[in-house]
Length: 243
Image (tube, rainbow, N blue to C red):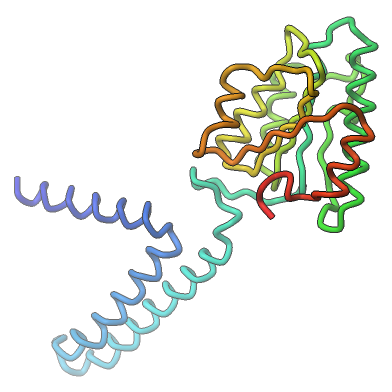
């Protein structure tokens, strides 16, 4: 019974270390532990003829663990809190209502034009090279994938993005699903920003996320495309609160 308790305590300690320092930090700690054991306990190893080998193997294994740990720490910003490595392909992911417009082609065209204006404003910033804009890529309902394919595509893109931007018109379409991407971006701990028309009241929980200190989400109001261009020209990526 005591052995089981000791094992559980050991695993609990390892889990605590991983949560506190991450895999890289844990490997560094383990590496230093192996090096210390090799230096201080190696001379006690029997037979004496094996002591040099034990010392060098311990130093080598500990040093390797330390090097790998340092590499993982350096790559740390690309690994999110769930342990999933995120390769940043896109500087900004732009989301806006689309499928929810249904047969309202005029509303859809207005949204597409607005997103293209925002995309242009972002690409004029010195630190932005690649923007993901599914709205502009599929500007007509006939181009939409099946819901399952669309979700998988957007999830992959969000995991590959550095920042998330939600663009909301003056009135949200009743069937819009764009808020799902906002929830995913928040869960991925991306720096997020909302560009909402001045006349729009945010959905209840989205408004709560803006007010929450636990979420990196900024809200900005706009009146028209010209106003948006000035916002980005004057503030740049500071609109996301991450620069």
